[in-house]
Image 1 (cartoon, rainbow, N blue to C red):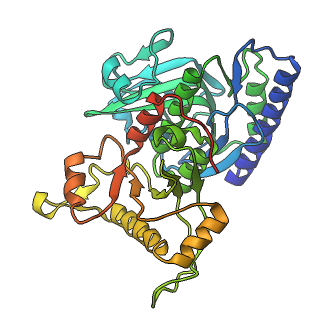
Image 2 (image 1 turned 45 degrees about the horizontal axis):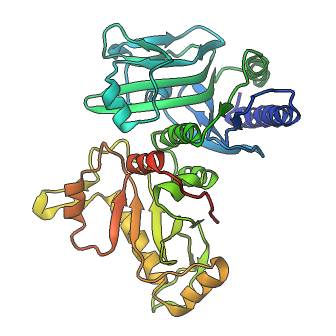
Image 3 (image 1 turned 30 degrees about the vertical axis):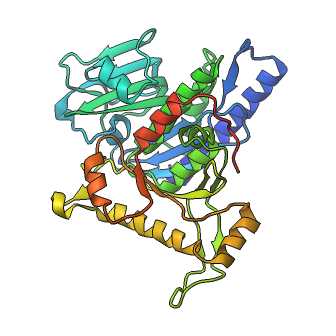
Length: 400
């Protein structure tokens, strides 16, 4: 089966499934009591070495259709365990030579320090869940061989550690099939999963805003901890879940990816337009400029050099240069007028914020040393953004 066939078949099946479930909930044929149903917003289809993966992400109280995103991850075990792992390390579960293997309502971990896990991932709840840990204590939660047929995960958490780093993957639903499957064999496998009947798949029912926030925070961490996921996919997820930015940044309004032509510019500027990731409105009505990068999971630090020569790595420096270009755009009066006319935004002396990195590679002292010559500039990492959202209270969910 070609990857394109896998993507199309997955999107068609899941959109049909959720449209049907949504209608059943509206008409009372599926009873969820006084709770609110949360539907996924995104279908992430990933091509790996020997397998295809379709994973549902996001949480919304209404369903229209899934945003389909494609991703390439060379190794399936890197995708699920969030670190580069080998079979030599050992595993809690190994999947090989089987088919339609179902893992449901499980927490799989190599070793668990409850306090350390919850300090970084406060949405993880151990109480009331089936927790399976490896016998040896330092093994990966799950390992795929080369010859497994198919498997699916329903509401599982995979907790993995490497040295002092901890990562959690929260799976709402994911299906894995061998690349050797025909299209029809995959469709039959997926349909048999969807018609299980034991529970409605991919949907969570909640009875409070706090419960909803836990689910959204878990899904957000899935996004930024996925290896080499494109910034556009991160941006698409934030756009579908505006409460993350509304609450973490204490803003009532933000604009995603505005397209702003250069009406007025300096000599030598041949650019046609700018397209910043985010304009975030402050309490005074003016906007700051944000650029989204990735968490850089393969980097130990966002800086390089000794204290006296501390500077940012090239990837971060590119983001800083991009922000400087956006700032230059708003230094011209005619450009500011265009921005106000198109998006009703005001920008003057903006703060420039780069969203990049995680708790694993952001050192505040080193960031401060590398930023010595920069004005109105800040870095916020994704773990901090998630924590701010998780712990926020009472913010509105309005945005443009």
